[in-house]
Each structure stands twice: as C-alpha cells, then as structure tokens.
Amino acid sequence: QSALTQPASVSGSPGQSITISCTGSSSDIGGYNYISWYQQHPGKAPKLMIFDVSKRPSGVSNRFSASKSGNTASLTISGLQAEDEADYYCSSYTSSSTVIFGGGTKLTVL
Amino acid sequence: QVQLQESGPGLVKPSETVSLTCAVSGYSIGSAYYWGWIRQPPGKGLEWIGTFYHGGSTYFNPSLESRVTISLETSKNQFSLELRSVTAADTAVYFCGRGIVGATGGFDYWGQGTLVTVSS
Image (cartoon, rainbow over all chains, first blue to last red; front, side):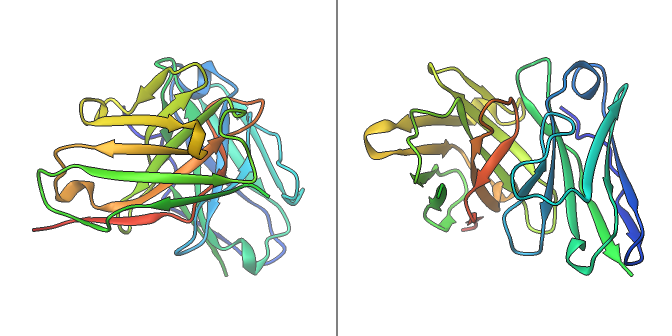
C-alpha cells in the first residue's frame, strides 16, 4: 500500500494559520471517516491530535482543527506557536482493514 | 494513567527473529478494541505494522504480513510483536499503541519506542 501524500514541509509565522493536506484515494480517506492526525517532536512518540476526521482528544488545543473533502483530508493549525514546530502525520483506515500513514510534513515556525 | 512501554533486544542479526513486548499499565488490555505496532526507520516516516483486534482478528501491512505475528497476553497485560527474517531495512524505532476507544484505525496512547538495529 502506498503512503498517503502530504507536503514535505510547510512554514508559518507565529500567530498565523497553516494547513497541511493529506491526499489518498476512495479506498482510504475518501471511503471512511477514520482519519487521524499526529504530532511528533524529535525523539518523541507521536501524539494523537485529531481522530475520526475532526474530533480532538481531551487536552488538545482547539487551535487544531481538521476536515475532509473527497479523497483529501486537511489539518489546520491557527495562532501558530513555537511549540507547534514538529512533524505531522495523517493516517487512515482502509478498505483492506489496514492502516496507512502519510509521509509526514515538517512544520517550521519562522 | 494509561502507559505503554516497549521492550526488546536492541540489536538483532540479519535473518534472525526479533521479538518485542509492549507492557500496558493503567488500563486492562482486554478492554480496548484493538492494539497495534508502528515503526519508524531512522529519519523517515511512520509505517503501520499491524493491529490485533478484540476477538483475535489481526491485520498486517501487506509488505510485512508474511513475516509478522502479533499476540496478546492478557494475564500479563501486554502484547507482543514477532518479526521474522529481519534485514537492515527493518532497522527502526518500534512503537506500540492503544486503539482509540470508540474509533477505528488510530492510536491514542503510544509507548516511547524502542530502537531495533539489524546488523551483523
């Protein structure tokens, strides 16, 4: 299974908003609402930020929001902060009952 | 507080089998819908390895399916990963994760990861 497609990098200044896209197919993103987003700081385990397309786990800032349109999911971070600088990964459940991750996006806060 | 802790050999020779364990505390392993393993080669992205569902169903990454086994040990509140015939390409940090309660596919709690290096 091929990885979901994410931009390799995005950047933004503090206070700004950025959006990270995640493109798949009708067999994964387009076919299910089981899309998750993870934040990973260097040397750390991934942290769940979004699940079921747009739900935030308890404790995750409401600056993080997400949506889906067709075969593309998107993560938006508003009011960028220095601590948001990290790698972000999307993942989706698939029609084969497997899980697929995106290639990851490095967010730089300028 | 839910905590997961991976453990394993660290260094494995090519063609051998690596066995990893994920010890779970603060939550009964029999209560979650699913548990899984994910890995990350040095400097690269996340790769899903497989998921064990309540009831015993297991699903694996097609690229690894022929070499992987995941099993639960409810009496010890832990689950394990066995990866056979390893090569240098299997060098990675291996993470274990708890399936999101009430959801499907994602993982809400992760271990800190354990590095497995395949080298002779």
